[in-house]
Image (cartoon, rainbow, N blue to C red; front, top):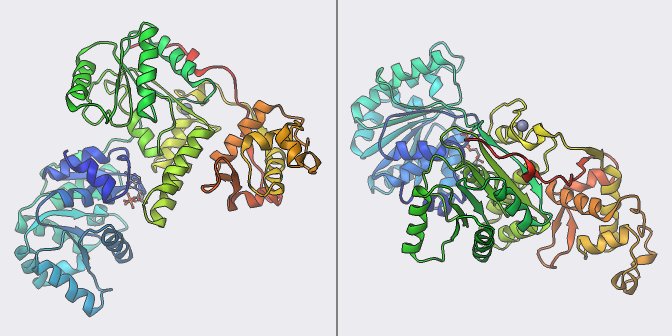
Length: 517
Ligand code: ADP
Ligand code: ZN
């Protein structure tokens, strides 16, 4: 849907759709009647807010929760969208302002409490103002047998008939009887387009690996899948070109793709990818929106994606045909530093930056997970899940150790050097490595000097990366490479909390046999 991706980014501040959102947004924007079942926290509101902006006229949103309506209206206004609510919680001025915006034809979203529908005047008003879509949140409230029954919800069907516009109903309640009731009461028994699927893509194997020798890791992964169609996502345009060249030199059919290329060249790559068998496209995230090749057998990330949503969307391009597909995501401290810096240096308001850090944390949590990746991923999107048997952690459970003491030593090294140094120097101090820098700064006389000799340098690197992954330390935006402690680390420093870390294995994930299509 043209414009949807731009609005997603510019108005809502998200870099990718969450599972399910894109298909629902497309259907609702096209004017289909829709019933969507999404878990709580899955991101329902975007599924009617974004289409509201793509459609002419006003979208009426019916929701039973006044506080929630007010929150959404406030957030939309902050994002520059004309939205208003008519609820019993309004002051007279608020109501007057909503009416004025409606009469002037400025309002895009009108939130309205169901009891308002009972007043005869509301129906007349809604007829006049040019409603183009009705969105119903918590649609299960129409079910007489459910515990959330709201008699006023029964008027929604009448409203739809009177206005003769499409209706999109949302709920997190998935049982079949409720669905039947929703279709009956809201859609007069005419089945809407339904989105009831779970978000899991069980045929996609999930794997992460710390960056060790990234080029080799990607080359090995591709070599084990020679002749299969795949995508390698890279963080920079330059890297797409150099990796594509390296792949060609190893005898692969590979080309690069990024936003800096001429439109015609980009279209050529898209066409070749769709028609050629076994082409590898090495690309930035610019590649993907227009790609609907069902038999992409693998997706690799040479660099860490931006967020857990971006990760899901990108790996989700593999295996649309349902046959086995493989993924590998590489990550390292430099990726974390880069992603944090991109958020900190962005122009987004503080709350949005905080949310972006949160979404990055979620992805890092997935990268450093100790148990089933799929279960971790699905939990983030609100679904419950059991160990999947089709991810690297189910294949080989990671070796773990109690990292509390190691983390405390590292934190104390950070604090004793006044949060002014990066992991390399801190590891020199911990392992008692007398470099010139250590001697020049007198760090060989710190009490922490040499207290970490029990672990080797490589293990310490893993400890520091995991500390970044758990958001115990963050790169200092002002001082390149330096690490600062976050509030999350305090309980560990004070011995009030413990932490389990994984021992990085040296077995390359790429040695897994390739998926058989
Ligand atoms: P619910 O499905 O429970 O109504 P919401 O619409 O309130 O969920 O969304 C839950 C959270 O997910 C919100 O914090 C929202 O900002 C976030 N969210 C929704 N869509 C996306 C997206 N595409 N990328 C990142 N975060 C998103
Ligand atoms: Zn698993």
